[in-house]
Amino acid sequence: WYGWADVATLEQSMAGRAVRLRGAAHAVRAVGRRVAFVVLRQGTSTVQCVVAAAAGGGDAGMVRLAAGLSRESVVDVAGVVSLPREPVHGTTQQQVEIQVKKLHCISRATPNLPISVDDAARSEADVARAKAAGEQLVHVGQDKRLDYRVIDLRTPANQAIFRIFRQVLLSEGFVGIHTPKLIGGSSEGGAAVFKLDYNGQPACLAQSPQLHKQMAVCGGFERVFEVGPVFRAEDSNTHRHLCEFVGLDMEMAIRDHYFEVCDVVDRLFVAMFDHLNKNCAKELETIDRQYPFKPLKYLPKTLRIEYDEGIRMLKEAGVHVEAMGDLNTEAEKKLGELVHAKYDTDFYMLCRYPSAVRPFYTMPCPDDPRYSNSFDVFVRGEEIISGAQRVHIPELLARQAEARGIAVGCIAAYVDSFRYGAPPHGGFGVGLERVVMLFCGLGNIRKVSLFPRDPRRLQP
Ligand code: 4AD
Image (cartoon, rainbow, N blue to C red; front, side, top):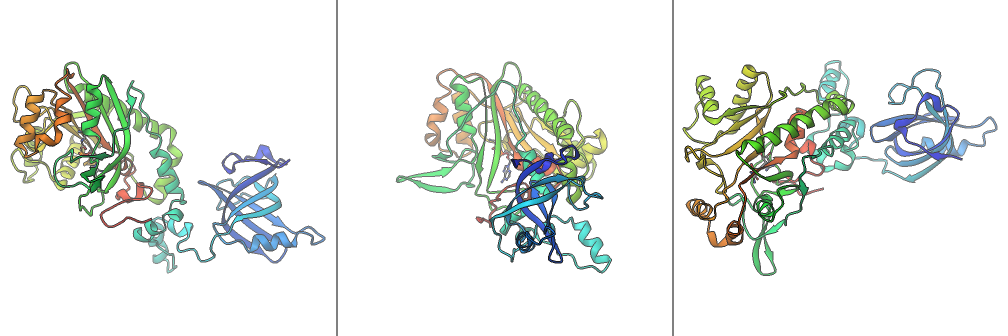
């Protein structure tokens, strides 16, 4: 008669009900030999379980078992929901507790945990406050967290971060596709590819679904998207680069203008941000408690400014920028601040980049080929998306590839797919870890990757 229940849904109206719960022993405290308290945790929810010896002493063994549980051990508890005399501080389900009748340890955690969930869950502000008050609180550094990631992931903020991450949904009539991750050569140009041997042929891990998502559009799918791994062998030890990240890529046929692609960015992201603010308020609060952040400011219709206008704003602010050059990270950040001050938004698009700084497959502007039908999207002054209209004319595509030193022979199948009738099309690629990092102001991409792969880290 002990039915399985969830810690998150326990409430006062369930008093008297017999339930079974499985969770981690988050904290264990014994009071003499007759009572032990086990705080049981499932995800971000915790409840106090009271293990008491009956008057005759018959359950003393169960109290001993409870008192000896190592933290993080997985236990099954069967008991009765009851109402505590006063709210149980330090748990999320403060209004109820469980009077335990049976207790089983399912998986015993080593008593010497390398890091504790409570230590990993502390905000830097908490640690600083404690230090000022002369208390000693353990601070767990980023590297140590990542070494013991399966424990670090159990902190409330991490549980919330990864729940949000999965709630990105597309509902615009796009077909989900899966493009190959083993490919013959670089798609974004440059040497930043992981090379491998493909049964005697040189190959690499896909730098992007770029070429194949375009070929899917040529294959008659008007609108396609993919959420999948993207591999970059760049040696960038920064807060925002990973060697493997999760890309959300889309590609669509366009009718009149590449702004149709920007319109999808607009609808998708405004809906996503609205959804997060409305339906994930609890998760956002949980993250904010450990990693305080300012809510993201965005407009109902995303601001679009042209590259030239962005350059003008930077120059006026005294920032040195190369004429017709790409913006470096500092210039992007500065422009984000200027845009915020002028337009009161942290989310905007910069359009019409110079052709020279975009990949070979980018469509030049019809009115001035020095510029291109392209755009980047920024959150708090950092890039999360790059997108553009693509060249669907095979001769122009081959010319642009050659001009950048790409051997057309290596991408012949790609160029050829535009010889059989190809619609004008465009698309974009998003780095999803960057979106979550920047939305939540988390400051380091490793915090939002389950098991980050950066230039130095291949474990765990
Ligand atoms: O700007 P990127 O390289 O563009 C492409 O891959 C194009 N094929 C996309 C397109 O459809 N035009 O990468 C797209 C996004 C970036 O805006 C950034 O958010 C993310 O992917 N990104 C990275 N994220 C984490 N670590 C890295 N090393 C990243 N490199 C790019």
